[in-house]
Length: 122
Image (cartoon, rainbow, N blue to C red; front, side, top):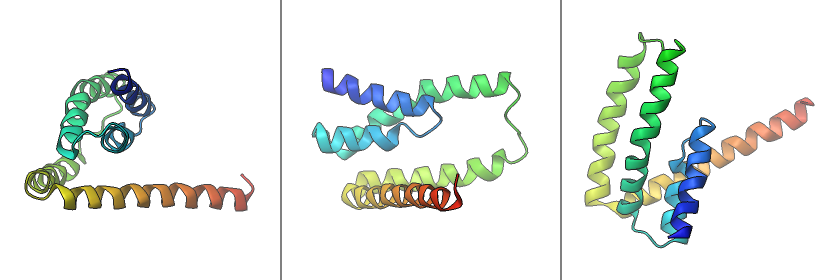
């Protein structure tokens, strides 16, 4: 149980910093704690509900939410969520590979931006 709590802490710290906590929580649960892919996704979604609601409340309170672009973000996000849910149920292996590729792209983008800053002298 301690390892699961530590995975939750790691994901929570990332979420608190504004990054997706699931980016770390899901791989920790699957690769290190042998949880199934669908279980890890479920845990991540359940953990996101209170943290997302709290973040939204704070952003609304501080007037940091601009409502005009919301439909353009929310509608594609809902469609992609439904599609990803289908893949999770019908082809979890494919979704796992897609997610792994996504994580590699994020790592390469972060590495690339770090390298670019070093060359720019920042």
